[in-house]
Length: 223
Image 1: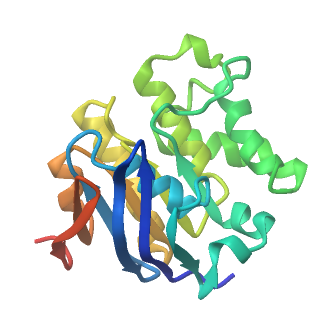
Image 2: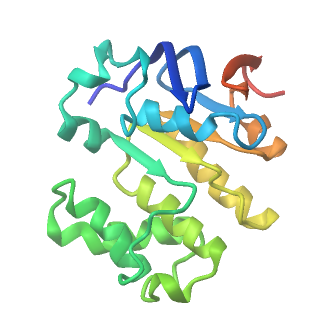
Image 3: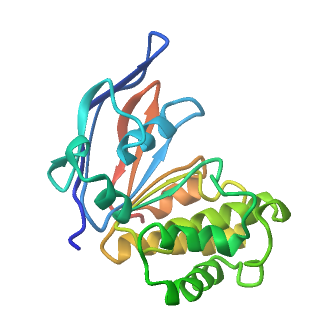
């Protein structure tokens, strides 16, 4: 499948009489990694939700591959999209492996290969020995890594990640960040929201959101 060009055109979101996002224009080519920075409450999570199609903007449009997100086949969008939610979004009654396997099953992956692919995804984020543990038995950092493995296991072409390294120590952060950046290295698109300057610096482009207004901080490869 051909990777997507992602475009936000004059995207605005209002809530309680306040602009959460104000006329956002953003164009991201396949193969790029993008960091969204800014203070808490600046609109980063809302922008990721709009780009994922989880929330409709009050004004403006999001285009993926030249098609308005509202007109894109939901099943096709779901197959190509991976999301790391800030609250992880894991199913607590399932094990770590079952949470990752579920991401493959809903995409129609062949059953025979699902356990092996899920185990490999967990191993890639340093959880090769934790697959059989229930989510509630895992630490916050481990749950975060399960969420990353779940987002990446189906090799999506667009990954949207909300604070994907916030709960991790330095060594584990580097491991998870490398896996996320591999999405862009393989020709896909990575957009992540972060408060971590080191994570932002590793991305090719960086934008800052303040009071719903998006400005470019760095628009080229990291030093």
